[in-house]
Figure 1 (cartoon, rainbow, N blue to C red):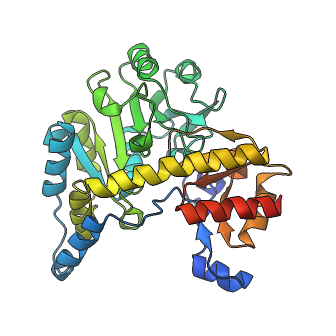
Figure 2: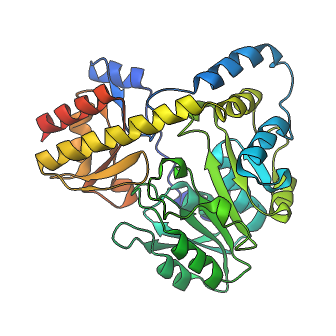
Length: 361
């Protein structure tokens, strides 16, 4: 009898989705929980995005615009990147999968840092490819190690900047040097899901590097800064040739109508963006200060989340905090069992996190 699934699928572990907050509260007999586990925008969605959704609901009997004309036009204007070098996805996750389906053949090789976004390896292995993981250096991406891990079979390199889950960012000079030194036929996926939160002006920016490597693909998302994670809308920049190949594989209506109109309007919501960045930066200052007073180590971040080292293991702290209605992320699946990861919440949520952490410690 033939084997049902392709080689390697049986070894994959499904991505562990969290339960709805309402169900967790029912199971634990608690109420008023706060979620600081998924790097989401604590302010909710952009108000302009919400209004755009309301205005468009009556058109849902029609298929989405398969070309993404208005959103891609707005992105082209904002970033001064030609329309033909932009692609939309059902979240940047779909674009990662689309890249693998387009450019990676079975037995091809990919390289990533580790720990990093868990989806990279899942998609590569699910497609029959092989993944080499290069350990971080002092919680930062080791570009030299990644370069040394490239073999003649390597087709794709994944770089998350700032890196999830550490929040560390790569300097522009380092990234440019890396792009110049690696073979030209390597597809480099520069995932910038959190780039808008960066405060270090020396950090690499993919939009300024597109012409420095022929097969560079820069990914971004509306999930974090603009607060529309539930709509699943992301975008990518690359050469027209790369975009053309990806469009040949892409499903024709992969970005839904409401996501497109919400994202288009969100790009103009400068007041919401300013408020979001203020909440994150002030929240980080508050959290850092209180963790210093408690005496816990943490990893300073260039994103809207960061790692905290905990005594007796992150899983234990996660479970104790969960019972008190504060949802954080244990890091054992990332190979960091001593850490939890939290994202910045509203001021009252940050205060509750600190109070609860003190109690469970």
